[in-house]
Image (cartoon, rainbow, N blue to C red):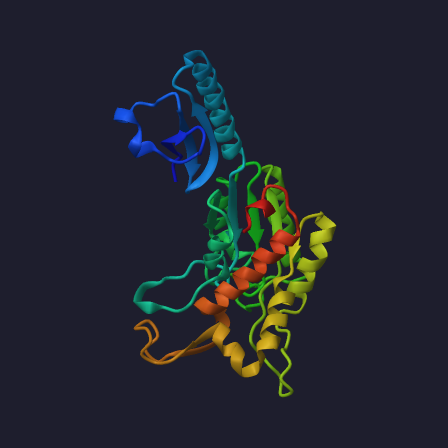
Length: 303
């Protein structure tokens, strides 16, 4: 939203606004004119002009213009750009025909300020292997600039058996993640690793079953090894889903009744993908963890 300048007339003695009552819309010796610079209705700074001292007024205007220029330069330097790469639990999904599915990065924007630009490049069905082999990574890394942040979350589809996506957690998966991290660093940007969110799979005793295995533990090992931040979303979502319990946790995932959307005429019971409510909850978890990390140029943009 652009900066706006507001002018008003105040009585010197009382401070009362007399804009509409100044004599013939002239400013008298008993009054002063106040200029306020605001953005989103928040005061950035203001300055006063007195009608009888033009030399002083000129200095005030010159100083204020300098301060405004400094502020605009500071504001431009403090913008944040985030890119995210990953799978369907993270990506933007369609909102057409009342489709209830969402990726958690799709719901994270409200947790950041207006100085933040989020480019969610995650794609449904992709693994750390196929995201690169399809040319998606080349498009992302070409846009990354020094100081940007890149969120990386893979694992769900690396577990799949097909040759286009499957990776071994200890070898090819590990190396793929290292390659992504090193290429981000080479651009002067900041990589952040995320472990995969949990699936909703309970045993007979009501305890969540781990379905990711080494794909999660490898990410946990790589973060300190590569000296980069880690958001352990697997741990946080496991705690959340466990707290909700076997029945209530369905509210977090794609449990859709028939007739809700034409895209799923028979409905769906999906223990992997998030609904709007679930994605918003996970986005909140991610935002809180990121803020707690105190990452330079990022954490201060989180509300």
